[in-house]
Image 1: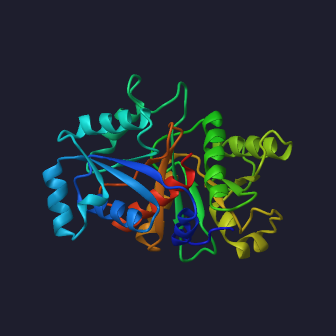
Image 2 (image 1 turned 135 degrees about the horizontal axis):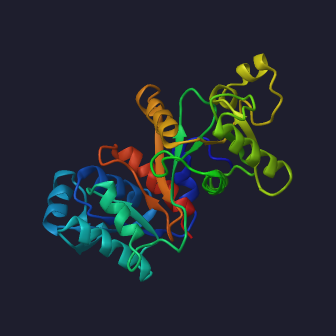
Length: 301
């Protein structure tokens, strides 16, 4: 079944064995409320790492039964993130989540060579699933937060990540748009060259399990009428499942335009680590964090 709305993930997850989420420095109401909602919906079991007194205070304020969580004490945010990675490396968790600590501290814990969650030579990337009210299905977009200017090899890895997420959402053969400023093949624009190479690789079977179009502009990727007007004959045009952007700026601006101007619902996670890692902003809503948890649970082994 293809998932067309983010809340449809819940029914899929309820039919599967529950995974355990470990929330690093779970010291804010948005994180705890999101984890609580995920537990109440039968999506996960949860471990909260932080100051037990503060966690209890938040639970009391939000009328949450603290007994549904496993609480592990660590009052320092850096140590809490390291401890969360330790628990996962010991097999005591399947999903990592960022609580009330800055992204740089969260990432340092994941990247730590002795205690972190990164296999050697791995490429980490941020993948977002966007439910835009102006689009007819979910969009998987990357990289919105980690890699400033991905090279050709990194774009191939990002493509693998977005197709993996799309397939977890029930899309059998994801349609991937390698987004550039134009659909014209321009040798003077490096992003067009990379997009054309990757599209040709897919056409020749070097990249399997998806359809790839590129270079292709965003309007052609997501609007069938524009594709018709411009005469672009491609199964991806106007019906993309996944968007791979040429750089962080374009992807991040697209993500924020969706959330701020279109009021899109989103979920996001970090891919490439040993386990899915929920990576949302400290200012994100509980609903965004809940959807992020659900996406991570879909991907957890």
